[in-house]
Length: 152
Image 1: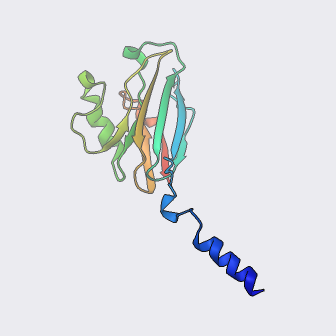
Image 2: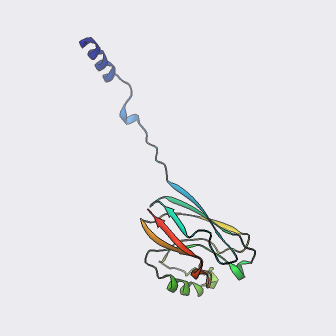
Image 3: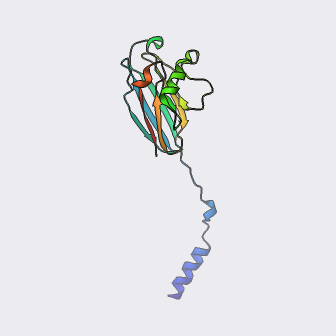
């Protein structure tokens, strides 16, 4: 019995495997989201759930036929606590910037403004856990084109 224990000790001590040789592979958490907007001023999703800190790739597709000037859509993720109506009112004044107020600290992420048949993709890091509003900031659309972005 002592012989077996001695042999195991020798094998254990002479093992060329070293714990410092271990490499860890960090995998980045990613989520892909596709959301559609139409000519009836509706998003097909009213809720999006993601994990805090993960990379979000969001694609906005405009499934309608109307041009950007008449029925443009974008997707805007607002900071927690943002007054949606006040933000939308400010956004209406930003026509030259596709209805995105320049320098606004109320925006976490946003897509380009697109027209019927177009799509656009953005990538951003999900904020800390909480519930955030998303809207389309084209004038008048925020009342119908809105939802919750839930970060767990």
